[in-house]
Length: 138
Ligand SMILES: [Zn+2]
Image 1 (cartoon, rainbow, N blue to C red):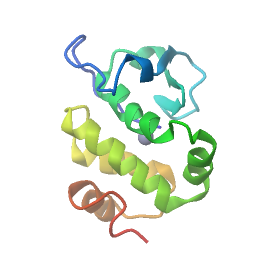
Image 2: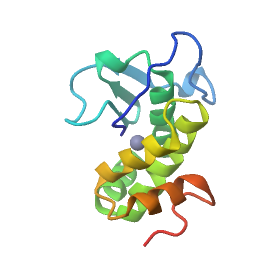
Image 3: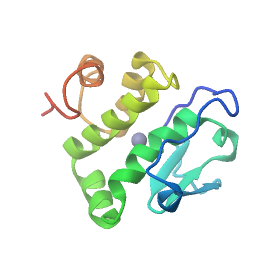
Image 4: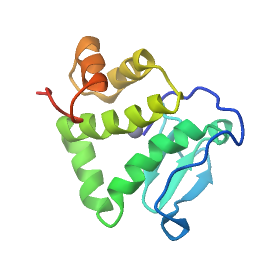
C-alpha cells in the first residue's frame, strides 16, 4: 500500500514487469483502504482515480504485486500480522519509488511512520538507505 504520491508526467514511465501475461489488472476505484492512495491485491492493483496517472505509485504497487503472485493469501497475512515483513515489503517498494523519483527518501521515511511499524524516523531513513530490505529492524 502507499500513502503518498508525487505527480509523474503522463507517459514518462511505464510499469516494469516480466511480461504482458503477468501484468496486473489496474483498477481506478475509491475502494482503496482509507488513508492510502493505492494497494496491490494480486491480480489487481487498485488506485484511487486522482492518482491513476502516477507511474511511480504504480511501480511501488508492482513491487508488492510481484511478491504476491501465487501466494497472495500468505503474503497478505504476513503483511497484516508481521511488522518485520511489512517493513521489509514497504522498504523494497519505496526504494523502487524513490529510484523513479516518485518520492524523496525523506518523504518515504515519513510515509513509513504511517504503517504501524514501531520504528523511529531515523530508523526508517536508515532502512531506506542501505542493505537488504528489513535489515537492522527489530
Ligand atoms: Zn506499499
